[in-house]
Length: 236
Image 1: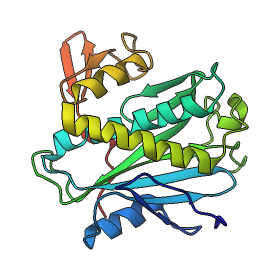
Image 2 (image 1 turned 180 degrees about the vertical axis):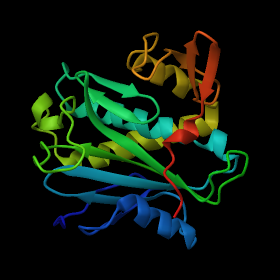
Image 3 (image 1 turned 30 degrees about the vertical axis):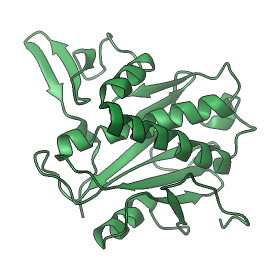
Image 4 (image 1 turned 90 degrees about the vertical axis):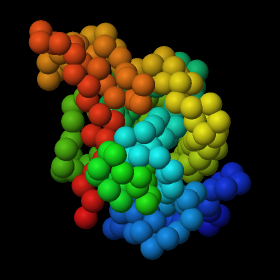
């Protein structure tokens, strides 16, 4: 889908539409690998989804650079909150899931130049995939617990509107992260955390987050920390 008029992004961010059949996350990663400046948003809109990927250039080890994923999540939450009817509730599944009115509705994706949490990556790409319409019956991964924006009262929200609003709100949170550190993002994310303090399907109780966004899970033997780098997809 090529829009007659492309999206408008805030200063410091710029966009590149990705044609059908390409993966915006991988497109952004390939651009980052050849040295594109940070702030590039690769985006794709089709009849069902909005897909985005934002190129970042961290200056700290991957373990803490992943805190930027919270800016992407909070950007989505604020953007949909501004566009959708007031009764629409947005929550976050750790590490990268979104819930709208309690049902699964899209997720984040991330990829970096390294998988070593102690190394400073040359680049980090974080993006998201948001369903607007129900998936086809034959689409892999169809989940009975999943929803889409049109089914949750967001029929007036278009993918283009959400893309533009998300870019603005995400930039605000990235600036906040750079200026004030992770604590404000941590606090804002916790306010929308899904089932914090409750038992997880895989076992243990979700107790909260550590100082860099890792999940604290308590079980009979103690408390373990699951790193935020679990959001990363394999580097290919």
